[in-house]
Image (tube, rainbow, N blue to C red; front, side, top):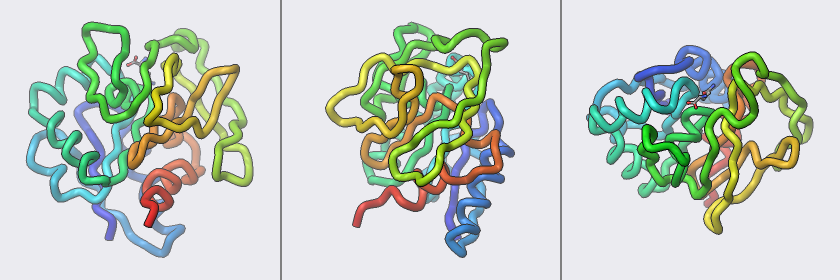
Length: 196
Ligand code: GLN
């Protein structure tokens, strides 16, 4: 059983839980989802998911609960992380916004809300490195990745911007892979990530 921690201070937690369970099932495995709202749970998790939501709120709660150092330790131990949308913002090295204290576990910087306002949300068929067919990517007030450091690799781009990146055990997407039935991004992050 894969123990999957989903940061549940804010954001769309149940959709991610379903996606993780679908990805696990595709590998003949089961997943146990642990909702993370306080320190002390992440050390027992095999993988970690940082969902979308509002990055200022997520950042504040992560700092206040002392979850930040546990996420960093999880990454330093080489354990997989999937960070989507606001999660990507929180994982980055900088968000050009004083209200977001980023975790520096993903070597990119981001511009918040740069793909447009909430009403400009859209879905696009996205070519992703390692996937045979395009992924139906849902963007909701998505961040733009405006710098990719040496440590990170671009997995997908849309409209000239990287929208999926990998930095060692951490995969970040500016879109919401949990909002479609397609489990391939969770699969890529959690089951195909560890190079042996
Ligand atoms: N606009 C949000 C932020 O900047 C991210 C959007 C999302 O997670 N859907 O925090």
